[in-house]
Image (cartoon, rainbow, N blue to C red; front, side, top):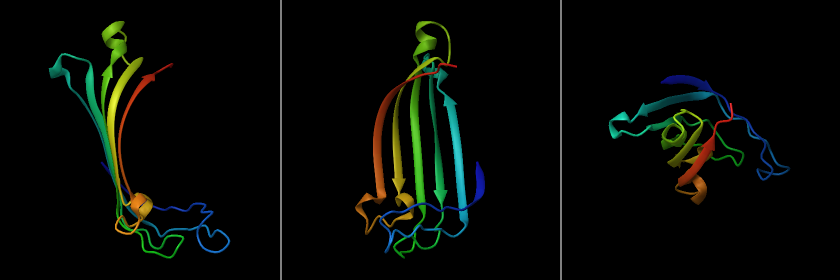
Length: 128
């Protein structure tokens, strides 16, 4: 768990006349990261992820007030390498879920793209 002072600025090619680049106010950010082995299953399985909360950061590039952002990304990972070769942390298969509320500080009530719900699957090979 951690708390931070958060400062954001970025390039915006569509904001205002001439593509105004927004610089946001400094705000508070809270984050928690977690990883829990699920050894009770008898499999090399783990649940991991993070949740990040960014409080409102002032006006965006269009002059609208930003909203509190919540980003959460969770993953269930199976260590396939451990199962097949007995070598841990070489090859993983995973399924995850990502949720982002008020994405980039935009108000989800007036911006349809300000909520992200994503289910994903993947494979990872750890070369080193």
